[in-house]
Image (cartoon, rainbow, N blue to C red):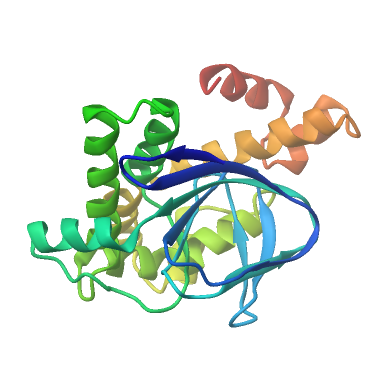
Length: 247
């Protein structure tokens, strides 16, 4: 595990084998960025099932136990952040220092994911850059988890839709169907989805289908035409075009 002594932050890429994983309580907050493709998961604390996709984030508050069960292996970037740093950022930003007292799953925020990867890329060079990224990361977490924040509400509204997309990539993901899942009109879904995810619904669906296609092709068990259909593409050339565009 990489340690940034001046910030007292620890980072590590973790390989999570199939089965159950218990995360015992520790003094630091933990942020876990999911690095694998679609991973059906069960929360250890609530027994609630959900599906992680690449970029999903878990937040486990300090002194809180976390963990999950999954039938397939996965990879995460785990960042341990001292509670004192989060408290300092909260005080400076006027945000609640303890916005939640239980693990939160399926946070999806491109800015937060980019900050986590930037902190890792900065390595052990605990200079001004690392301090700035760590501060921005803590502030973004506090913003996302603060009670009553619009961004948090939008994420919560969309969880059934994100879950449905992850489980039905090879099926009907038209706006009308996704609107019914979300309990919104097409226009409401489009507006809230873009505000929360930073991209239109169609773009998100294509990204998830492209990730699934890459996984299937890497496994080598299906011919390209079969992999295209299993990932939800109309045909192999459609898949190939998006694989190239999103490379």
